[in-house]
Length: 124
Image 1 (cartoon, rainbow, N blue to C red):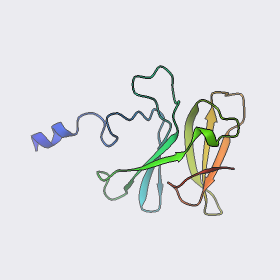
Image 2 (cartoon, rainbow, N blue to C red):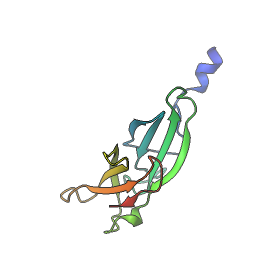
Image 3 (tube, helix red, strand yellow):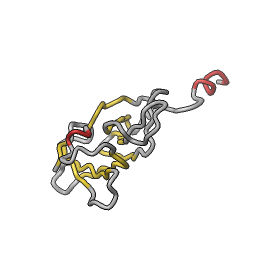
Image 4 (cartoon, one colour):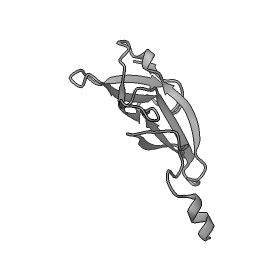
């Protein structure tokens, strides 16, 4: 038991080279999803990479998997350099909406949509 606790030191489920500064967890169906922006390892700026997703079964939070890139910076119509603080919700229509902001905080939130929680979101 003592050795087992030593293996859990540090990040409990993300790879050690992944930096998700503002991940938002949500339960959709029987899975927990975490969506987040990404920092570069040893980078000097915040959130310059695409949005990624991770998920795990609600009943087994030790079985996380990477869902990959769910939304790319290039998909934003203004091609903003930084994507910050994503959040997702399931709409009344059954689709999933990803809300996000960019480095231009004075502009309205942006929205992308997808038919599944960890799929490929498209600008809405």
